[in-house]
Image (tube, rainbow, N blue to C red; front, side, top):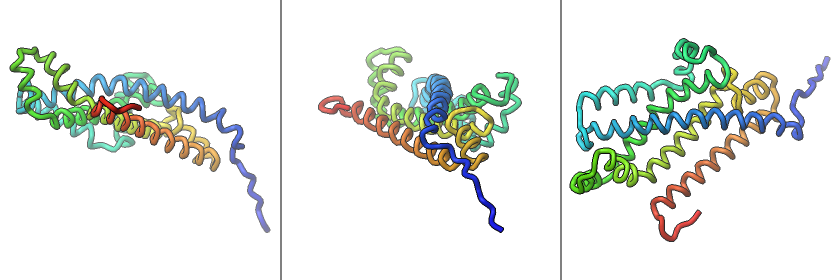
Amino acid sequence: MSVSVISQDTPWLEIPTLMLPALGETALMVGIVMLFVVTFGGVVGVVLFNTSTRGLFPHRGVNRVLSWIVNMGRSLPFLVLMAAIIPFTFWLTGTTIGIPAAVVPMITAGIPFFGRLVDNALRELPGEVTAVGLVCGGSRWQIIRSAQLSEALPAIVAAITLNLISMIEYSAIAGTIGAGGIGYLAVVYGYQRFDNHIMIATIVVLIALIQTLQFLGDRLVTVLRHPQGTSL
């Protein structure tokens, strides 16, 4: 006896009505996260570099402790981190589902990652960059802003691009806790309901989105490195 299987795939013409709101939720989630990540991660990276032996205010103890914290934050896979800080997330947001519950672990994972990338970007600068600022009598803030960060800007933009793509990937994982966005759409419709059309659509959209962001980020880095004779 044969058993007929009724297709549960969403018609292709109806997919945009599900995909567009999901994209909006992903953009909101990632936008909030990147605001915190770039701000606080940037500070962490600057402090990491400038407390090292090449920095403006070297301090071995502070550098070691901060480096250890950053490395610890980068050690855990995001899914493990997300589960591990559930009590903290609930204490902070009052919920363990939805966008607020996803934003907390994403920020927690993103700050040390971006901080290390900024630290690496500053380490790639010639030692003369900081030395010239000191010789010219600039304050610490002036040297950090006008010499270090300005000279490292192309590498920092590349770091932001990399971090942005990572946060999009994390937001997809956060869909497992009902955070919304493309990941939630893929889990609830594509996986749990065996909707092949939704699964294919989410994969295509994610690939296209990440490829586009990487292309734009690379082009911006090229423009910053070669400001004359280069255009977007």
